[in-house]
Length: 269
Image (cartoon, rainbow, N blue to C red):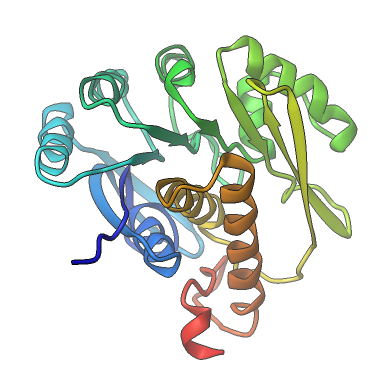
């Protein structure tokens, strides 16, 4: 019988289904994997923004994780919104307890509109407890600025930011360029264990449908890692998937704000 690679997404739920757990499920499925979930927060949101966030009790998050990991063989965990220190501690403990091979951390700390989604002490706890356990951290520009406390104006600033992440215990960093105002976007993958830098370049697409791109990319990377691809190849395949999903979602209209990408573009090509 064929096996399907399984990832576990520990993240918030998006009622508009563009980001969070919902994006992770779609992204993993589109890349050939299977996504189990442990929900950390219920968000009331749509294409226009986030209206409310209700944090799930830490014990409930723990029982969700245990339910999945005691039954399914999970090779990769992908984390999104981790809204409390207690939840961060549980995630760190479970990664170690179940000896999960891969952890992809999407530091959901700042919204696209610039609003802080976690308290500073929680953000610091994520850095201290989880960065040393991660296979890869995948911040966008606002998140990288928030964590490093340095402004980013162009890719020329990336090396300085990467050094800060390295000093915080990060093993590998994918610094995403999507918020930069350039015709070509070049994401930078820093592998601090091999001291290598890999760049991934794509033309910037003019579309409002970019909600959930960070969630989708990180869960795609986790899926490809479980399939046995080394980090640079897993990132390359995930980047290609994301670019095509954005490109194939340009002509759709969702709500009044930032709509989702087209995860299942292969079904409609």
